[in-house]
Image 1 (cartoon, rainbow, N blue to C red):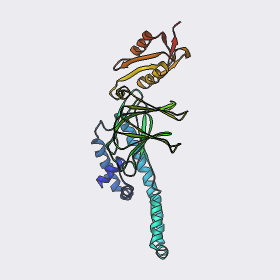
Image 2: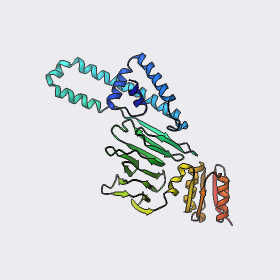
Image 3: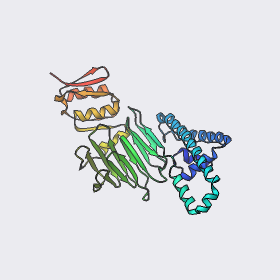
Image 4: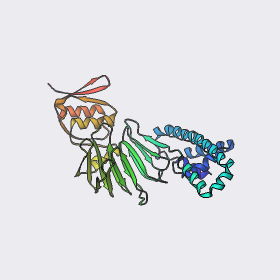
Length: 326
């Protein structure tokens, strides 16, 4: 049972194993043993696997999952007792009908989601149940259900993430970014899909990925290494160009590359990096910048921008305003 508990805590338990676990937990003594197993599992976690900032959230998720699953099991138990009391009736109907009923009952087993969020101003790294690695940029989030790696490898992404995906030809990993889906077998790539942004950007370093569109069945594009795919959410249009992928993926090492980008795009990246809100006057939004951020403070970066272009940064409450120099 310890193996099943471990798989359950990691989100890898099959439906049959989850049902077996919930029945086992009916016994109060078994629930004490379960808590002991869970404590051993938590203490044995590699700190690099789950970000420290997410451990408390992870524990709450697992407790909630267990509590709701147990309630679901109790409801299922009532149904089971009903079937037992009516055993003779079902025997008359036939074994085939009974199998049909239990199969449909199993389909109602609850679906739960695990979410991992990178705190604003920080980069987090997480290992998925299938062994794939994900780096989450500041303020970004991924979520997947309890059937991940048993029936699917579907992930929902909000924000930006870099993926190093374990290869599995029978069960491709799919990253969902609203309309756009990134389907992969095993590869390394970056996806940027921030809320409020008009674009979804996918940069491929190694392997092959296929881009799909939920709204357009005929939409399909196979990305090659070194390519940047930029999907316009408003126009539903895809453009592809060759790029230096390091400029788009180096953020996971704490390096931010700004290359010939207008101020309105630069401030979006600074907001993610430094967890700082910016606004700007219309006349300065097209000023262009090229620089690299490693360990520099926000103050140092703003001073650099003021030297490169005729702008002035003014602090107004919690917001920094970029204005044109008179």
